[in-house]
Length: 542
View (cartoon, rainbow, N blue to C red):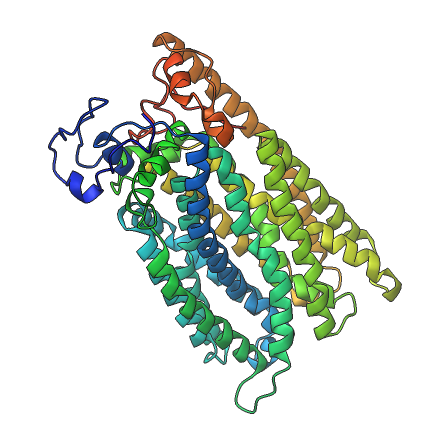
């Protein structure tokens, strides 16, 4: 039956919250609606099974993109801008005006404290992302961190800046994990990489527009406020205003989205079947938590993210100071940071496009490690004389390929993890690693070590080499897991070889039900909220 002929789907409210078996049946005998089951399973069990046509898939995907992407892009832009206000403020006199000791680690700790707060908050964030409506939760977090950023303008010494930066990190901690959860909840595996890269590419946009914004705000002369206080107030107020729209317009799930009318909710959910990942259960499961912690691939991704976040933390905080060490003035330093952002955008979006085209993350991750290795070597061996500025800027811009690595790791992890609680916990573990890396990173650089910053550059070089090693190990482990699942399917009388429809294009949706049937029930467990290890139909991607 086509989606156009089917009756309007029952809502989750109509399904109810008890253990009763829903008796609505016309084309397929519906499954029992059990309390605590995945919300997508509850919706599908109470309505006729539909066939998602390529046209219907494109139409619903377009609606989803038009609602979600503006929210994800704008919020991550603001979060990235708010984080980088510290590095811009350093160029406009924060160290002097707040009486920070340039010979100590005080400025480095201002960079690290945000990530200490994010690391501490991750267990609570994982729990809240499972239990709470994600749209409302996200809106409250964005408003709170915007308010705190405004409060940073009142901090006039190291202690005040540390306190407000800690609170800023605590409320920003939920944003990126929430975005990864939203992408997993709404998109097929073949669509997730480009969507994650889209919002993550805002880092590059911030390095371009943020540089221009700081350049303009830095020229404002005030007898009451320092330049860095003006930057904090502007960014904080803008964030608070945007949070209102986030709270109102971010849907909590495909099953509860008001912008999806008629059978579009069923299409939005059914097209995710071959992800084998579920959608949202709002039930915390401790067996998922245990499996996340003992799964080797969790820790391989953890090591990769920690390794890439150490350079990220150092360069984000000290990037403008590194450029300044080439002999440029403060306004030229801000402007020369703009191409860094352009390269970030190219690396992030280009890497995602290539990984989607290849249907593989690992070779692209290895490829993205090569430019930073080249760039760091240039910065280590080239002198700081004036006639070397062009070569030094080239080396610095080559290091800016590293932001393309993180969204691919997040996508790789998300596409290879099943079960609502396990996905959230795994993401939380990865962000602990990312936060730890961002804590360590700034401490590898000190203002007193300019102009060469040898210690930080040597450490960063070793880390990019380590990422390549971790990627190869993950490829080997994923190959082993796929062979185990193939053997288990064969033992159960299913086809050992499965066509992974979740990585296909919309044009490959035609005949999906027939393909599922020929594969012996593959996809029947898609919305059972079980982990990838316990679902023999789950296909791992490398």
